[in-house]
Length: 268
Image (cartoon, rainbow, N blue to C red; front, side, top):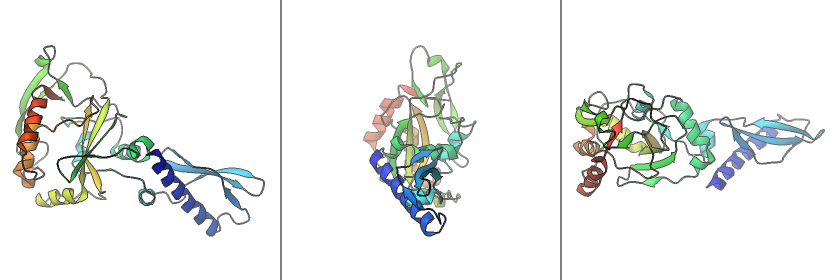
């Protein structure tokens, strides 16, 4: 809730305020903490009244770091190495090209509405979802197949990254610019899961992993969790060495995925 974020900011300000007083930074003046701070440009600011002359002073948090804010209750979602593909112009799925990965992470950390959202559980204990309003210019990653757009469908073999087996897929190649997606579906994996997968493929582990990390960003116009593509479920069942996550195939969930994706295709 927003109150949780407000409480986290207040605790961070109180800590910073006491440090400034005890360190002697405000020697000769007695600052009086007056009001709740606010976030601006990714930095916490707060006001103090200096006892001499009752001067109002705007102060930025002195010891500003992600770890400091995490200690006071902020959540940080790290984009892992695999998730960075969404910021590559050559990627075939949802592309985010108007902001950097660092700015994307900062937006998630400093937006009160996003901070207050509850993670959505999945069938896998190492995976959760978060659906947020789209604050980028990225397009929807899939569209329904209709009589008016089926001529833009393409198919071919492709792999998501080096070392994976190419699989047959289909996608739209529209001749016009599509409007931005309404939502972003973030797929989050636990730190332990990402370490296991990287080690199984002899890959470098992403630095500074958090408890929950972004491995996929899906632009969509639905505010609900959309099923993963059937071939992704198949790849997961093949095991970590083949680029999956090792989750056994659930036939019921697989059929739900087929029902959904038989009517839709990804958009490149």
